[in-house]
Length: 374
Ligand SMILES: NC(=O)c1ccc[n+]([C@@H]2O[C@H](COP(=O)([O-])OP(=O)(O)OC[C@H]3O[C@@H](n4cnc5c(N)ncnc54)[C@H](O)[C@@H]3O)[C@@H](O)[C@H]2O)c1
Ligand SMILES: O=C(O)C(=O)C[C@@H](O)[C@H](O)[C@H](O)COP(=O)(O)O
Ligand SMILES: [Zn+2]
Image (cartoon, rainbow, N blue to C red; front, top):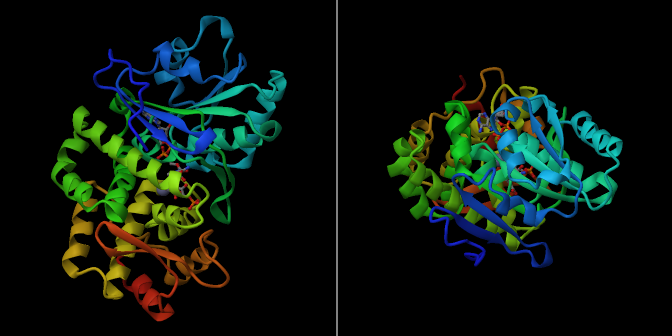
């Protein structure tokens, strides 16, 4: 991951990072006012057939601005889907396939995902599967999508029995992060995004964790400079991990801290009641508590995890209607598991995560039974 020479001198506030994946490498442009500026999107189009896919919340806010950043003579197609995690399913992907076929799109088409992680994951999967793979560009408009889901090429949809169970690794051609889009983001969604930002500090960067602890009020007040630095650091850490292990054979699994518990919560709730970031927030506290029970984190470490999650206004308890057995049944289906062992991402220290498949079942059960409910 390097600073790219593509940064034009006119954009002082602009940063460009690179995800280094050989011939599939791509830039992540980060800065204010990028939507609508023709120099960022045009260059990454595969050909003249372009479809922007977004949702009914994001379209009125940013679709026109995005289209101003595309050549006038393209006749860009638009598809506006319903909003919500509950729509992240194959039926929505089928709608995208149908529109592409109806418009006569061929293998040189480009899909542009404009929205949060739900749109990004679904459009990425539609791109991965349409005619066995076409180009796509991520234009993430939530904090969560800007720091996490738009980078790294995990695409897919939920199944009623399990989160993200159907999908593919398929990298975008570019990621365009216009930080101005965060001004319209509801506070609850901002907090959800902060969960994934905190995750990077917990798994790999203790200095970043301390930096975040000091700046949580500024982040929650949408301080542009602080938010941009947090986005840049998060993308940089994720790009580094993805470049090392694109298809999660090893180190990439660390990005799943809190997710084994969090995905169980989302699936149990039927998707969309708890936000992904909220479920991951509670899941990271569960992982921290378990790491303490295994003798790795101190009580003071766990208190720090709880405090930063609380400062980000994230839940510190699991759903009231979820029993330990509900967690265990869903966790057994987790994609990280090999054979019959549960594989969890735990913390040896703050800033140092590990993959662990030897948690004694009674220790896990005690954690699940004793963890607070709300
Ligand atoms: N592929 C990955 O690596 C990866 C990583 C993390 C999360 N995810 C997935 O991402 C999804 C969560 O993404 P999310 O948190 O962005 O949720 P989301 O896509 O549902 O967006 C959250 C809400 O914000 C709205 N919205 C989007 N941009 C807005 C803006 N600028 N102003 C106002 N409202 C806006 C959306 O319409 C939606 O209502 C989950 O499905 C999760 O599994 C994937
Ligand atoms: O990019 C990754 O790798 C991640 O695990 C990032 C996670 O934040 C994200 O929620 C991802 O979609 C989870 O992937 P899954 O393979 O556990 O479904
Ligand atoms: Zn996540």
